[in-house]
Image (cartoon, rainbow, N blue to C red; front, side, top):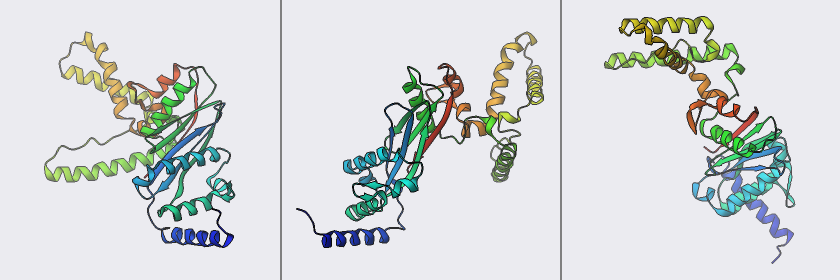
Length: 290
């Protein structure tokens, strides 16, 4: 049965009133979804947010999220997307309508677009979505981009490599971490607990030739003090240097994608895994609920 213009206006007014009443509610649940075009050169990821997990898992709600992300790929910003048409009304108006229908605050949370020679995606249980672009289309590009998108979804990252860090940023991060650890050590000392090591470095960008040379000398001195035969030092020292590097590149492991341990094989870095495909990662994006 068709509704009259008067009835439609009445429903629209009701939806807006519900939306206004719930505008200050937290909408940390919902669905994270992705869409990649047919030739794998462009992808979109969004989160359609709501208030409860019950609504977020609803089939109709997830279907709406998927319809929206397929449209989102045609826009460069969330603002453009919200102002675009969706079955005779704007996307923003559609969200208000759904807020009135469902009775929960409904909104677009995360919104990201990525273009590249080949783009792939990964969605983790409708909670986190990620996109990855590589430098050339390859036969197994879908495998690589899915694996790296899974890495991004799981571990997060702010940049591709430690080489992208500004020296001032690294220094400020180091100072902040030292301050936190020193404060924790004060409390640990008071309680008679083991103190944490205060770092001197947190990024490979700080590990100069001189620093690594000193680390090697320190390792030799340690082995000598332990009474280890000098003829076996060459077998032990490389492992100690790798441990030194791992202990002093925590910023890289947290924020630089290529410098993280690969989640599917933590014996190698992401950069080592990608190298086997003879392409480069040119970009990545991530959205998440919560």
